[in-house]
Length: 222
Image (cartoon, rainbow, N blue to C red; front, side, top):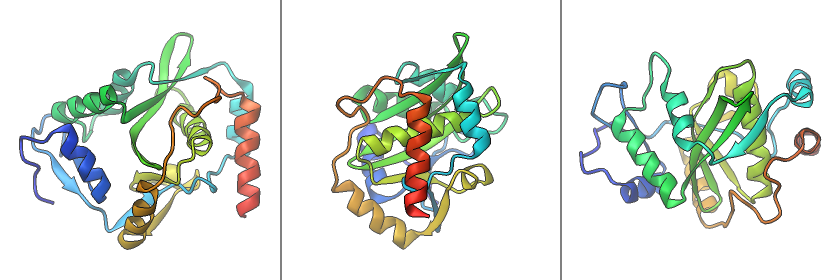
């Protein structure tokens, strides 16, 4: 894909999401940013998130807390902290701008006061574009995704875009769809209205609510 012009702004980035493309850098120290438009798109159907028995046991066991938008920069830093990353300094700054504008959100998992995992992404209409996630403890990113999906369902979202499909995401119910199918789903979702903070939604839903909600929806669609 062609590189993005140096004058990339937050507004242009939002228009790119609405058009079905997103930015990536080749590496942390590469200043160039490229538009990406995958032939096959990864999505997690919000009715099809798979919560395994082991993950359900881990959530029930507790010992962690979940917050949203408490440490957005920390979550992006956690995602960028891998030896190889597509998040360079300009991309980091752009997502901080989107967060300040109210379009980018993070969900954090804490343990003993330490940030052990999280996920962040961008919300437009009834579409949520998951950008990246990280984990510093076993299952922390899976816990983050489970709580995120529960929130997206409660908020009325229709599309959870994961960009690519990894084995990790596939184990949680992620699938690949064609570019044409993705564009059609995106167009419908952009016409919808959703909220990342739906009225009456608890700051941290109970483990039982998250688990039962997932299993009930999975059973209904299986």
